[in-house]
Length: 188
Picture (cartoon, rainbow, N blue to C red):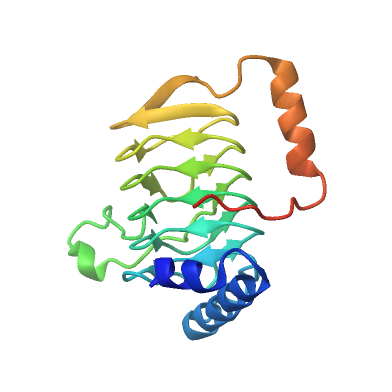
């Protein structure tokens, strides 16, 4: 379907209008009041997103993602297909009571900074912070906070390397992220 629309309308204003209308329908259907109008949530396959999620400008949420309660996602972030932000949602420490009846603890906030990229099939445990500009490799399980501009991967995820080679590159990128919203130019 997407290829047909691309051929018919190209990258012009009609395509933008169709995208805007489609995202309005997704936000309305799922009751997502705190999702910026420029965010794109895939509708190809089942997604599960808590209604209190906060999503900033130009965020992409791939098909099959599961996003639990109390999650905030910064601008320009990409969640590949089947990313899950879950966990810590059942009490396991109540003796004499099966977990299914033990209730739920208070849901801790999960924060994903601006310009982060979380690879396909990754799991981010609830209550963590993924720093701005961080990259999480495919099929990783993130069990600890990830600092800004670091690349992590594995089970459990560990630091692979820094995203930028110098502090100057990092400052230039910070300035771009902190500035006005960058006009969209999406890759095909």
